[in-house]
Amino acid sequence: MNDDSRSKLTQLHIDPAAKRRASGTMCLIFIVVALVAVAAVLVWRPWGLESIRFARGGKEYTPTTKGPETNAAAATTTPNPAPAATSSASNAVLTVSGYIINHERIEVSPRFMGLVKWIGVSKGDTVTNGQVIVRLDDAEYRAQLHAAEARVGTARANLARSEVDYQRTLSLATNNIETRAAEDDARLQVEANRATLAEAEANRELYQTYIEWCTIRSPIDGVVLEKLTRAGEMVTPQSFGGTGGPSTALLSVGNPKDLQVEIDLNEADLAKVSLGQRCRVSPEAYPDHSYAGTVAEIAPEASRQKGTLQIKVQISDPDKFLTPELSAKVDFLAK
Image (tube, rainbow, N blue to C red; front, side, top):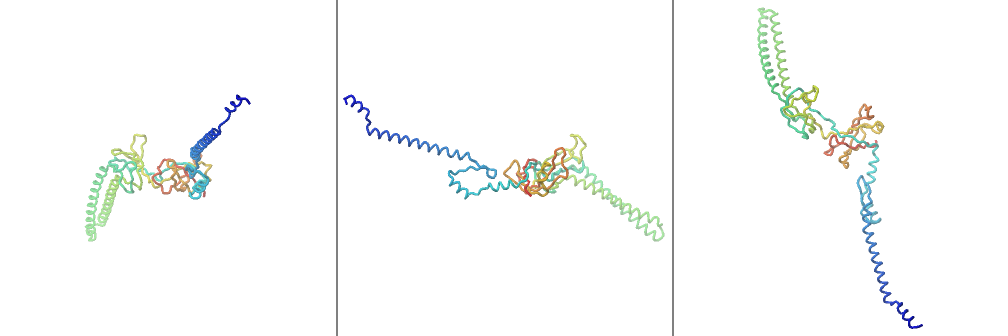
């Protein structure tokens, strides 16, 4: 082999130290790539868990554990409400919507036409049974009461005089000085004066009653739902037609502790509802609140136009979250 061939082979020869440096560099690269892959898995894993959500009891549940062992331990230590919620939902044979109403909504009206002198409450005020809420002008009735009291005095005086006359006539008739006819006339005059006195006293009581009616009191414990008139307006117990006439009511009062849900039930669902059936009421505005109820009223007549029958569900223990005229969902429970 000549010198040129040896020099070329010498150039192609690889130093063992260089081989060791190249293999060390490749290991370093593999380690870096492995660390990057592990970091990517760790970053992706929480987002994968975040995307898994379970509905439990109507609420979302997001698992926070990272392994099957931890999930199993959490399942044994944390109560799972899902079976109870499923059981409660399956207990409902029918779910419909209706509107919350006052069981008793009383329109407070006057007994006669009069002028409103004073109103002591506003919309939303709490009132008690017997509390004075409105006063009507009673000046006319007080004047008539004074006249009636005067007539009572006159009738009493006439009765007293007729009784004296009768006693005198009776004494004379006993001694045959006066006739029996005169005695009868005197006695009948006493009876007539007694009747006149009774009439005058009744008239006086009538005007006293009118004056009492001018003071209007709340008929129940409740809340003022609506204020229908103001001081200075005329009111009357009946309407004469038209919108410009006197008001027919003063206030609207209801009891916030006596509420019902009014439902127009489709005739196809009537077989699932019965009087006294247990229900669960949930207001649409607060779906996380539920109240016990019972079917309190089933209308005796259906609506031909709608094909429905009106049902009323009495709510047990209502609170501030139940507002009349708002909608509510009613679950009719299995019997």
